[in-house]
Amino acid sequence: MAIDTPERANGRKAIPGIGLVKGLLVTLKHLLSRSITQQYPHEKPDLPARTRGVIALKTENCTVCWKCSKECPDWCIYIDAHKETHEPASGGRARSAKVLDRFAIDFALCMYCGICVEVCPFDALFWSPEYEYAEYDVLELLHEKDRLQDWTYKVKPPPALEEGAVEPEETLEPEGEVAAVASATPTPQPAAPTPPVTAQAAAEPASPAAPAPAPREEQAEVEPDQATYDRVLQEQIDAGTNPRVAEGRAKAAAIRAARQKAGGG
Image (cartoon, rainbow, N blue to C red; front, top):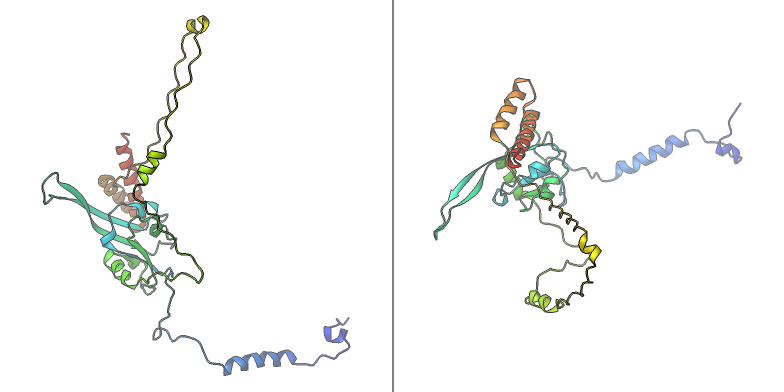
């Protein structure tokens, strides 16, 4: 049984090969048009400023607070540092400061979520539009701080505001605001007189007051326990674990051990 096509339903006879002719016309149209393919690597693409190419590090801003490493869901950031004591020039108590020894990111594990860039409180991590950092071996994707520092010079300035956008207002505390708030504070009114105590109420023992809930203490910043780190790392390597995975597990165990020591447990 023959199936009626739209041309047959309208009483028209289908022209054989009309679909092929239409396809050739589309091919001919693009064949005569100018090609827009960029001749990479001779022509480099002009990427926007917010391109998530690779994470760059500005070592001068890093204070070794470990926040990026702790918040990283893949444990692909490796930080090593030591403390140095500096005598103040004007005398007084000596102060210690952390010195960054190593800052490495394993881009074979990184999933480019950008959490480390967001949580950095000192603007030490940036998104760089650089994308030419591939290697022939996956183990060589662990880039150290020297190369991460070089990528900061390729970070583009933020784009300008869109047309019609309102610039954010600066929230500066005006002078004399504290005095104005103090003067506007209402004077405390005298308390209402307490009712007389009856004999029955005086005979009953006073109920003890409920203890106030203890304020919740925030978890203090701790440094990984080096002994635990070395022990777990050696155990993982002896068990045949991948070196990158072994370092992540050792770091997690070292942080847990340091927190237990800080908490007295």
